[in-house]
Image 1 (cartoon, rainbow, N blue to C red):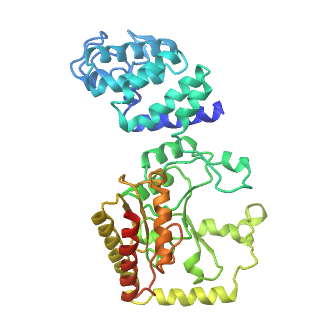
Image 2 (image 1 turned 135 degrees about the vertical axis):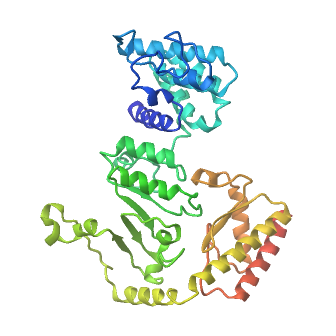
Image 3 (image 1 turned 120 degrees about the vertical axis):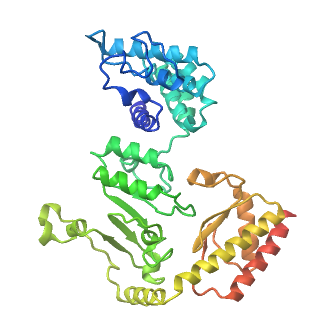
Length: 423
């Protein structure tokens, strides 16, 4: 357990460096603490600006021409950070210096590390998850496993959603939060030599990617030689004819397809770059690299015919424009009705695929959906089914089959259900 959590600490230290917390890492090539340090006077540690003082905590590996050992470097860094906290006690740089001091003391003096971390936590909300992580590591070092576990609750971990999934599968996964490009980048860089691939739903259930997120993941995986895989079982042919790849303008190395591709019949497909797909062809890659791909329903003629017919309909001019227009009209209508009723709610998704989350908080990842009121959602869905809207527990799926009459019927059902929901 401790080794697993320690790996999380290492990953997030990398992340912290990437966002500027560990600014000393950017200056570690300096060879003296004299004029090359920003606004420094000799090696006295005197500096004029908060930022320069914080950066000056990047103690060089030499002092007065003498090489320093690891322990000496640590002590000198801590000394410089202490000066920042004393000279600029109310600034953001003092808080960052406190956090960095805590990180440096995780093993050497975990009790003091906890004091530093907790003192800065309130003033650095953007680093809350990471401060909790480092605090948990310090608690582990003190032997307080139960308190540490409470700290680690905020860190994403692989959790099976069904019985029968071996523990070994969980242990072979690293989970990164959706819509957090910096976290993904840090994890990929840390584990690039061990990663078989990065798998992501480009549109996660009802959560759209924030602008730039998928492009950042694409760049990170490409830069580090890790295949990017899109799970497009839901989004394929739904957001656009080219799926989420076309809709968001980001192309992965591999993708999986299902549902729409079979026109309602059991059919699935894998698509990808030629050099990867070649592994399904023994004549191209040989016995050692050949990947077997067989299935009872592979190439099923009924499903294939239904899929081709569906795709022919979706290719007709204006098909996706109509789907998106219908979705936008319904999303706006439900949002307006809930606002008018004074019920806190977020409409989350894209026009062809979306739902409501009963919360006043913005929904940007899976944990955001957990902030919703599940009982209110259950009652709302039940009221809708009683009024002829056959919606499941999550998601509205918009179809070309939906007519203007269907839209009007749905809005009327919402109006009636919301009245009862509020009563």
